[in-house]
View (cartoon, rainbow, N blue to C red):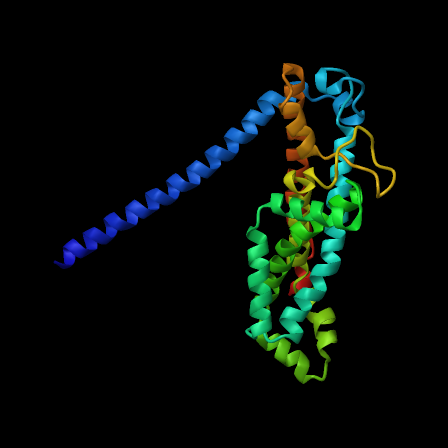
Length: 287
């Protein structure tokens, strides 16, 4: 009987190990397939003209020009939303972990609300931003796009930072307070310094989400062939540029869409690598 139990456990272990390998292989295969498709279709259509020029007349019908307006617009939207998201995230995270009891009713309600907002589709944020624009009498612009994307990435940044700070040993907090430090000094000089790598990662994660989202800016940022000069000007973005080009009946334009997707993928890849490099560089501050 004992031998049968041992044999059954070995079979069970092999089965779940095989399932884990299958899941890992499936994820890697899907990732490589997506990257391969983008490279295969986008690389032949990628050129210096494509990334250094704005669209010319008839660009979406096979004319000359490039996607410089969409590249700059995506960077403007992503940087702006991440900047305001960071300014709003840090005070909320400090309140959740320093001033409010971690398991208090208010903290639980705030975390539950953020988790719910995290799961809301981005098109809902876009609809809310559009309604806000109508209420305030605003037009589709860079400002409206930044506000909408800030609301979109705010739950992501707050909860990511929150989980990192919750990993800091409670004994460190108690020891700091016992030495006479105020809660504000604890937050600025100890907690934020200890959680710096996680804060950087959360910030870049929010930027990556903001720069790659299409639904949230579809009704709020508008679209233009020009690079915005004022915050009230409409702005293009790479996801919308890809969407419009893929909808074209011209094969040349659809090829450019894959080239634009390749540019967006490279930007996201750079962000991911930068996140790891910065996290490793500032890891010493968390020791």
